[in-house]
Amino acid sequence: MKKTLFLLLAFILLGIAAIWYISAKPDNMSRLAAERTFAVPDTASIYKIFIADRYGVKTLLERKNGYWQFDGKYRARKNAMDNLLDAIRRVEMKFQPPAPMSKNIINSLATDGLKVEIYDKQDKMVMSYYIGGSTSDERGTFILRDGFEQPYVAHLPGWEGNLRFRYNLAGDEWRDRAVFSTQLEDIQALSVEYPLQRDKSFRIERKGDEFALYPFYEITPQIARPLRDGAIEAYLIGFAHLSAETYQNKNPNRDSLDKMIPFCEIMLTDTKGNTRSARFYPRDPTIVENATTGKREEVVERFNCLSSTGDFMVVQNVLLKKVLWAYEYFFQN
Image 1 (cartoon, one colour):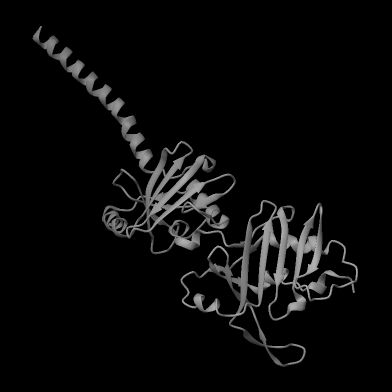
Image 2: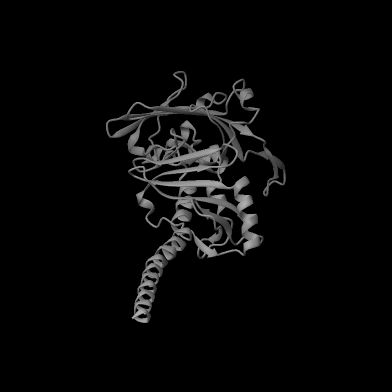
């Protein structure tokens, strides 16, 4: 009887142990899967991204109506956001580093890691992790899911490089670099002034569905020749996407530009009454040899730009020249 009771008790205990093992194993597997998951596949559901380093530099990116906003007031640069969202969507574990390496990775993340928080439309955090440095071969990036202790090496399938660079932009590097970004149909008026070449300066005004062209200065004689067909519209299209190469708001020379006469000043007013202007100054002329004459000539490849937004920018001449027209360019020969 005692033997039977003992066997029954042992059977019950084994059953309880089996039930516990079976129920606990999915939890362990679920936790393992969670600590190895970093991607947010549906980036359309992301409405806020917060990135912070260990030195107090913080980045806030928020989805607005058709664009991303940086720091609560600036339009974010599309290319930077595309790269970041691509990383967020596709980042995955490459391998688990050995224990000795893991300890060093954790120490590195503690001092130089980037904290990344991703939120949905309801401001609910859907993902959070730390991004660190790269492996010695630059083919993997250290990563640690927030709330877990095991770091991993992550990558983007089909892409090699340090993922950190997609997250680790700072300040103006996140900002859209548009000097002007107004579509043709939204332009109400435009003026282009060349202070040292007054007869080249001009104004354009919307008159219903058409545009009218005038000299900028009243003393400049109007050209009597017919306008080239579509010339004004072709010119104004150039203001849809006119971007700077970079911001240089910390450049110590920016204040000195206010005392200089600009090469050109452009002012654009849209149909809602918003006005934006920019002054352009030649920057560091390059000496090149003319292939035809053999003479050495100065060529301006870049312009400094002071925008009405308060920004100091650098604009490449190859992009700017499409809007550096003269008054006579609009007319037939």
